[in-house]
Length: 275
Ligand SMILES: [Zn+2]
Image (cartoon, rainbow, N blue to C red; front, side, top):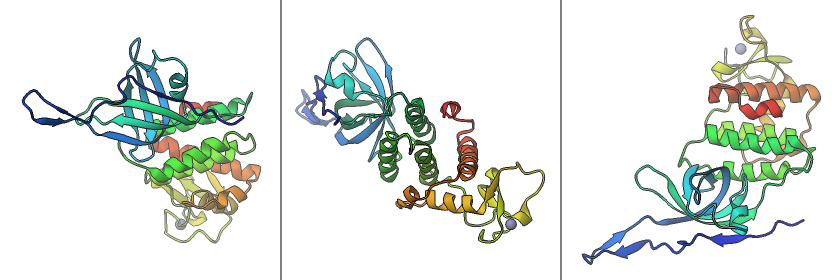
């Protein structure tokens, strides 16, 4: 089924960007920003309004008040749906406080596989990580594209687990926290020789057999997994789609990304328990 294109406007969608004060002086109000954005969280604020946390392509995460967001029925309601991709218009608050969402037009709803909870929870996991690991107004247009592709991949049960790994690694790269999968964190040697490496999360990368110590947590990474980690974390490159993972490689990558994400987040992501 093709997604329906729903459009709706708030009552004050034509909010002026400037107005004439009684003194005759023109007072500039906030400029309207237009972009595409993903909805990461929707909470009721009052009987008629909602607070929406969005991840807009060109601005980074924002929190915006959607006045009348609960009152309007039909298409607008469906546009403010978790993980929906929307064309949005918002007014940026100059000093703290919430931005004001004035328009939302649905581009693509999140469509997990029916009766496949892993696919649905994978979407929630993406929202949890974007909420927890990206900063307000820190734009990540490349990550936005990756997230859109990730959510599309969640529509295919076969792709879900690999797409999660790709997303986690691209998110870590974008926020400057991608572990080093090329050289040993202990001695700096290239990780081209040796068959089994360790993962040293607090130092941000892999370690060679010579630098491995008993006191380090036993996260082992075989050479094939290290190569897969490099492929899956390559920026802008879609090679990862052609690299299938053995059960062992998947397990090792899962441990590396869980460890790295939990380290940066300061806790284990809640949704991981369901994946
Ligand atoms: Zn070393």
